[in-house]
Image 1 (cartoon, one colour):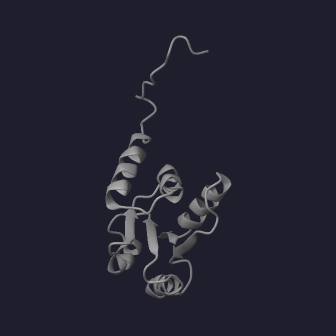
Image 2 (cartoon, rainbow, N blue to C red):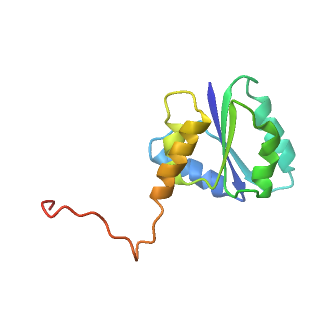
Image 3 (tube, rainbow, N blue to C red):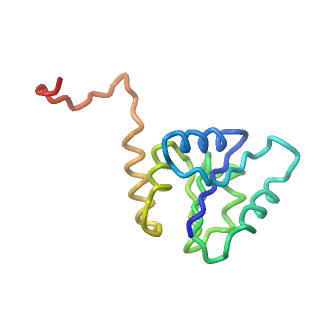
Length: 133
């Protein structure tokens, strides 16, 4: 079984989860919004992992590479617990909707696709087919 954790500083993860649900993605996401109350982040992370079977696939999506939230998940990484930083809506949707068990190669390919959707629109020139209306 796959579990997805969205974790961030403040409420970004909750907003992302709401957006994913709105767009038709899974609504059973585990959300950790760090530093909004007095609950230590280590306790929040341990609590969410305690709900999972140790052999379950876990995808953790965090906001900032090497940020404190991302660092709290690093000890849990193994061959079926994947930790991805710099999350975005397209990346989250693509990974959350994957049918097959995840692999590092699959996640890297999805990251490459997500990077392609980030553009400075001021300088972006779309491929336009003159026959399109």
